[in-house]
Every structure is written in structure tokens, then in C-alpha cells.
Amino acid sequence: MNILVCIKQTFDTEEKINLREGKVLEEDAQWIVNPYDEYAIEEALSIKENNGGEVTVISIGPERTETALRHALAMGADKAVLIEEVDGDESTLSKVFAAYASDKNFDLILTGNQSIDSGSGQVGVRLAEELGIPHITSIVQLEIDGDKLLIERDVEGEIYKIEASLPLLVSCQQGLNEPRYPSLPNIMKAKRKPLETIEASDLIDSQEVLSARTEVVDRYLPAKRKVCTRITEEPAAAGRQLVTLLFKEAKIF
Image (cartoon, rainbow, N blue to C red):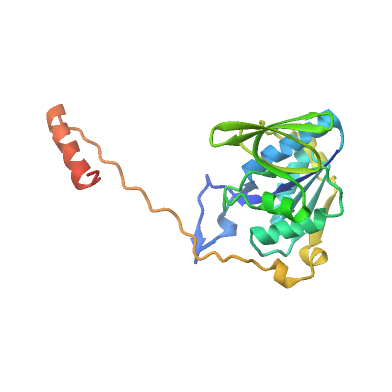
């Protein structure tokens, strides 16, 4: 089975993030593989191990994105592709991915359900529409039964059971699997696995297509939470103080 996994390198939202004029300071950020994309990588590897085939991982981004692709190779992917010189939005990314994948005859394409930075969840479904293939989002179970795929999809706590066929694109939700950690030998092997770098202009020569169709107006950090108030009075006095705080400061009524 010929499998493609689209991944994204994102900044770690659990680490400190610094902004300047609405832009993330990349040199201060910690960069990781988008966690939802790791579910997609793991599922692709499991399918290959059980059914044979080849797993290609692809990402769009600057040179630093190579570390995310090497991580996927260390997990067990066979080869990687990095597409550079793209400064666009979800529409742009899906068109660039589609330009690469259109003549590769991939049977199955996997993406993360969303990214932890922008969280739009649009690239996967847009890519499927560009390629003219079916797509299923938020999957939490995938089983191959002959020429059929038996899929479970999480819809706000409800599980939909779907039967599908190839070619197909799915986006992977938390709970689908537990991504493996790359072993040291596999990390060393990943350095020798093929990683192809392509400029977006080699795939699409239209600057209009490569330009973003949306504009980010601003980015900002959430307001700092107020320090909590500790009440140390005796029960009766503490009750009166709590009521005062709830009415005057918390303004619950």
C-alpha cells in the first residue's frame, strides 16, 4: 500500500512563546511535530507493518522543518519530502500538497485532525477536495478488511461507523493510537533515509496560487490570570469575606 502522511512542525504550546508585532519569535520557540500528526504517522506505520507498502511523510516549511521529518523517519517512515518557499494559508498548503501528490498514486493519505497552533483543521479536507477523493475526519479506529476500510469517527462524543474504499484521505484524532518513541538505532538510520527538498515553484508556477487568501490581523498572548485570594479567617468571617469577593470582585451576579 502506498501511503502519504502530511505533517506540520509547530511551536510547543507548553513552552514559553514570545511575540513581536503579532508574530511568533521563531528563535525563542521550541519546535515539535504537531501531536495530532504523530497519530497519523503511527497509524500509517501500523498499516504498513500489517499490510506491507511504503510510507512517505511530507511537510511544508522552512529548513528547520527537516527535524520534524527526521523524527518521522526515525519512527519508521521510509522517505520524506520537504517543500520550501511557501508563505500561505490552508488553501495554499492544500494546493501545494495536491500538486505533489496528484501523480503519485497514493492509496491512503493521513493527516492530523488539526494543528495545535492554528487549529483550523482545513488542510486535510481541502487536500482531498483538490485530489477529488473521499475524506473522513476525526477517526479513532481504522481497520482494513480486504478491499474495505472499517472506520470509526468521533463526532462530539458519539461514534460513527463508516465503511470506505481506497483511495481515501483520513484525519487522525486523539485516541486512535499511541505514537511510538523512536529508538536510538532508528534515529541513526533516519539520518541515512532519503529526504527530498522541493521548492514550491517547481510544483506550482502561479504566484497567485502560492499567495495566502486570508490575512492574520493579530496574534496576542492571553491576559495573565489574577493571583488567587486566600481566605484564612475563621469560618464565619471567611464566609462573609467570600461572599464579598464573589459579589464585588468576581461579579458573579
